[in-house]
Amino acid sequence: MKYEFTFVKKRRQNKANCLILFWSNFLTLLFISFSAFLRYFYENLNSLRELFFTFSLFCLSLNTSAQRLSLTISGNSDFESKIIDSLSHNQNHVNAKSLLSEVNLMSEKLTKIGYIENSIIQSMKVNDSTFNYLFNFKKQS
Image (cartoon, rainbow, N blue to C red; front, side):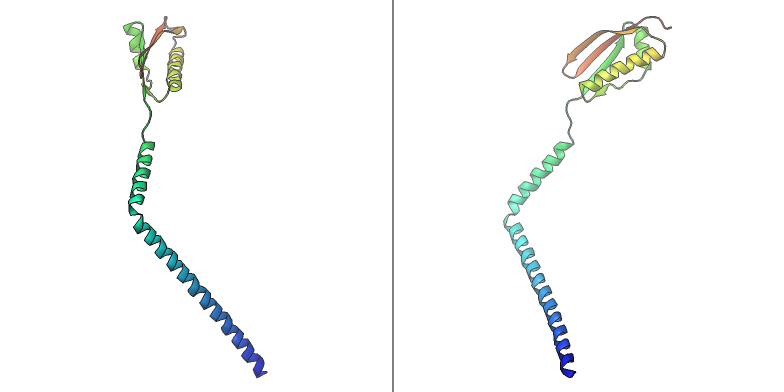
């Protein structure tokens, strides 16, 4: 019976020794890997700086946007221009689709306040980023 007990005791000691050996090897490999990383970082510091600055420039360029389009809507007369000015509209747009939807929205607003027969007389591109639209509408119904 005493012999069996010592066998179990030695078996437990072997397991404990295996665990200690495993963790010591693991930590040694971890330290070697970390020291290799630090050595690589120190040796390639200039290339890492270049990579950092390139990445920074890329991130900053994401914040920039394309050319903005400007919209000017006016009426055929001073009275019509005052009515259009009283209706709020967005003058700066990101793309042409947004600009055209704003013009259609202005036509809908004029229809809602009673100018059912409103029309666009002229649409003119002043330069690459500025558009003028001239509205004409008849008497309010």
